[in-house]
Image 1: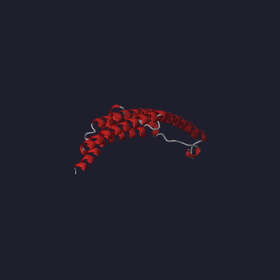
Image 2: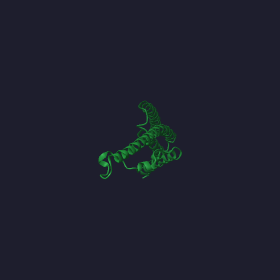
Image 3: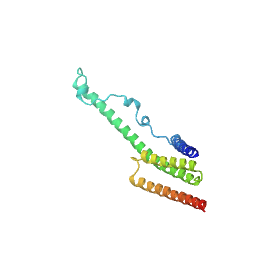
Image 4: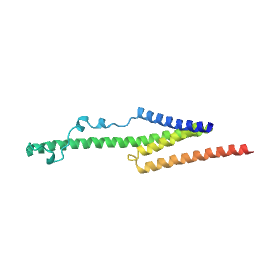
Length: 178
């Protein structure tokens, strides 16, 4: 029964820490919002694609004039969408770096708590999931070389810590057998 409880507590710790870190990041470094870049009145303006969208009872000149207005509207929408996309990519890149650093710190904390299996496992899982989230969220906005270098560093740290934990475990098992 205690093994089942350890697993449940480990999963619970992983979920709670993961959510807590994401809430903290959102509180202190919020994601860009579309409405901050694009005026809401623009998004409700109708789009006219060509002469076929003009009413039958208006003149060609009136129809052309409305298309010019829509061209201005389209350019404005394109501009604000591009600005939002750029801000979102930058945010994703920064979030990737932030979550990678916090994830590694969380995994290091778990390493020092490795004598308490359920807590250490839960903390480790939350750190790994947080790092994975950062990779996923920052995938488009982050340079491939930066992703590779950060991934390499994170992988090296995780492997190093796993080796250390396994050596500790082997020493304990060897001592118990003697």
